[in-house]
Length: 276
Ligand SMILES: Cc1cc2nc3c(=O)[nH]c(=O)nc-3n(C[C@H](O)[C@H](O)[C@H](O)COP(=O)(O)OP(=O)(O)OC[C@H]3O[C@@H](n4cnc5c(N)ncnc54)[C@H](O)[C@@H]3O)c2cc1C
Image 1 (cartoon, helix red, strand yellow):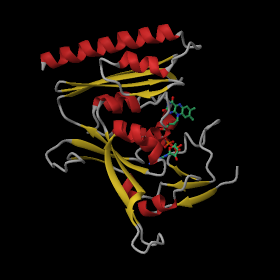
Image 2 (cartoon, helix red, strand yellow; image 1 turned 180 degrees about the horizontal axis):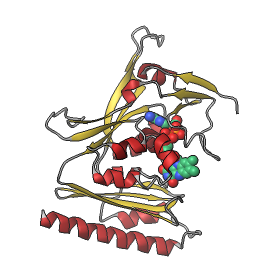
Image 3 (cartoon, rainbow, N blue to C red; image 1 turned 135 degrees about the vertical axis):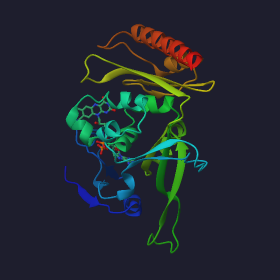
Image 4 (cartoon, rainbow, N blue to C red; image 1 turned 90 degrees about the vertical axis):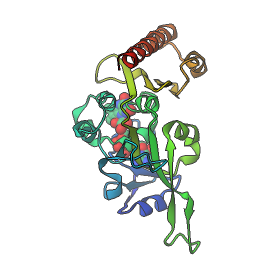
């Protein structure tokens, strides 16, 4: 397919060019793969925008409390950069390693993974369980002083990944600029990625996080979707997902697997909390 390519050098330019016919291009591993669902006439390359790179420890992005401990990961950071970062928490590195292909670890970006919103996602269940936040930029909610788009300033938002999940349909033209991971010592996150081999797609991905007395679940079921149910309502979310029998196993088998895994996560998180 013939496509127009725009090499954006600023965030304003990238966001200003985004229309429903255009797609942001990060690592290209999802856009470029065989059978990709991305069918855009224009690609907006993000690789020259400095603001989308870098990993640093910062305060809570919502309250701007400098004493809060969060990790800001620029959307263009690759999976490998997260693995190489000393400040990245172990639970995040576990999820990053679910992408077993080394060449793709160097190309695939965190922003591209979240935006792809795949039901076998490497990162999203863990990030949901960890209460991760996103920083996004879009022309909606921005300022356009001369009403012609010249010098228009994009709107910026910080929101929980769980809220992004609920608003995703309306945020199609927004650029993910960064992901924030909570570095608090009292946050514990466990995850599991069920697939036939390390290199194949996950048919079930589960994660549970505990911070204080709050528990969060991230659950992705291939072919069905991504869910963030409460610990007492995961089986309702499972029913609503309409999980089917397939070559990976029956619906009953996958429900059993989800049940025992979440039970085990709960036990382990409680044990760890009582030891600390
Ligand atoms: C063989 C193969 C197997 C794969 N298996 C899996 C798998 O099991 N699980 C999985 O999760 N992924 C899988 N992928 C997809 C992919 O490798 C990852 O999801 C990757 O993280 C996507 O990142 P990217 O930078 O390459 O995204 P790109 O391909 O550049 O973009 C993907 C989508 O995200 C949008 N986008 C990119 N960056 C942003 C941004 N900053 N803000 C808003 N939108 C943006 C693009 O417009 C596009 O729609 C597979 C890919 C291949 C080739």
